[in-house]
Each structure stands twice: as C-alpha cells, then as structure tokens.
Length: 146
Image (cartoon, rainbow, N blue to C red):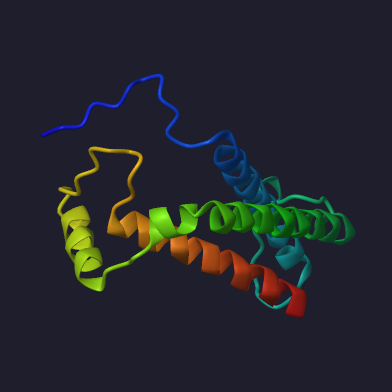
C-alpha cells in the first residue's frame, strides 16, 4: 500500500528548513575558510586551489571561520532547542534500533530502501541525523580547543 502525500502539504516546518540551510551555509564557509587557513600553514607540501578557499589571506580566512562558527553555534542551539522542546527530536529520531538500522542499511546498499512517506525517517536517516548533530557539537568544541 502506498501512501499519497498532498503536494501542497508542508512536510517540514519553516523553522526546520531555515535552520537546516543556515547550518549548510555555515559548514560550507567553515570548510572553505578552513582550507585557506590550511594553505597558510607550511605543514604539508601541497595547497588547495585558491579558487576553492575563502578569506583571501590568513586574517580574512580566520574572520570568516570564526563568523561561521558562531553562526553554527547559535543556529545549532536554536535547532536543538526547538527539536527538544517540541518533542520532535524524540518523535522523529528515537528510538534507534540497531537491528532495524542494520536491515535498513543493507536495503540501502542494495538500492531497495523504501521511503514511501517523506514525513517519517527510516533508521538510516535517523542515525545519519543524530550523527550529524553530535558531529557538529564535536566540531565546534574541537575548534574552540584549537
């Protein structure tokens, strides 16, 4: 049985789409400014192409990097707070069953992972989203340590 979704139905609320895209922009700015910072360090005998970097010079790259970090921190805290307070985190991402995760992962590898209802995440998506949330926290904390 296939579920029909109204083409005008809102699958994800505006706050979720906005925080998602702000985080995506922050990560791209962090990566490209980080590459520029990397190019300024004489540790390895190669550089990334300047066209792929942001900041122009080391000081500019550091400014972009810190600005993007604070965007990621503030926006990430907003995202997590709304998800926790609204109960969405629990409803959409928990529980995470290792057995079902393995089954969904194997189905994904075979190209047979069903996803009839875009409002419900499968176990692979749940694990990926939870991993990204934890990874962003680790990213910010490790950046602050440096």
